[in-house]
Amino acid sequence: DLLKDIEGLSGKEEMIQKYLNIKKVIIVPGDCDEDPSVLGEMGRAAASYCKTIMYDNISIALTGGNSIKAVVDNFDIYTKYKDILVLPARGGIGKKVEIQSNTLAAELSNKLNGNYKLLYAPDNMSGIALETMLKEKSICETIEKIRETDILVYGIGRADEMAKRRELEAETIEQLHNLGAVGEAFGIYFNKNGSTVYCTPTIGIQGEDLEKIEHLIAIAGGKQKSEAIISVERGRKKSVLVIDQGCANEIMNII
Ligand code: F6P
Image (cartoon, rainbow, N blue to C red; front, side):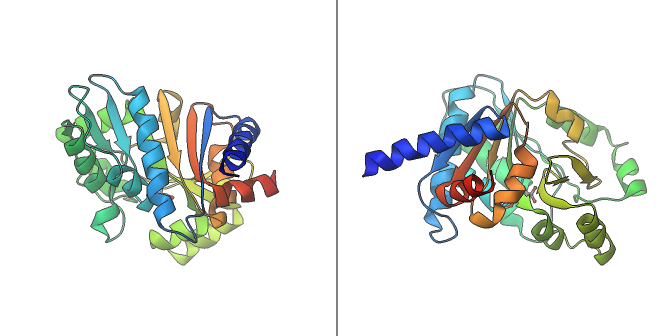
């Protein structure tokens, strides 16, 4: 039965990979909505994949969130490669320091015996403040490194949930709704067809950088995220997507 299950999973991995037109799909057994330990297993799967693509001097940028925390928590100490640079993909969000990209980048870098750089700036910054920050040399250097990262590991959220987490104004929330935003990743909101409909003003990774990044690793689970995942991942050819079985089943229902 277990074998059948696993065979079933690899069939689904291939179907979802082809449907989304991405590089690879990894489905972890279970449902993280029902069993929180499944998110840990997803983190472990993403960490294992990440190890297979690492080399000396590589740079890894991380977004924030609980899913990326699961990757970092389940990365074991791994010092095979030298001079690894770990970066936050974007500024911080909200009040919870445990799931901010800065915190997670520092933690992962310790496990890899690497280096890290932090972005001391809130995400969702507005025009003038943003311009002023960008005049700071050390910030510019960090941003440059982030935008040229070799690996980007990112979470995916539902547009409505993320708008809440980011405490966006009612007006912006309505705008996102009217634009048909269903999914969000790295500060960019996507509609059902996978088109960008809104970008959070931010320092860090920008939409145009994604094309140049060699390796993308997305991690997201739970049935309620299936539409969001499709919106973010559709046609993202370099992306390796780690999801749970619950979410995979839901995606199979949609496609
Ligand atoms: O806020 C950072 C972020 O990575 C978002 O871009 C993404 O939508 C969200 O976190 C995912 O969070 P979680 O893994 O907690 O669902």
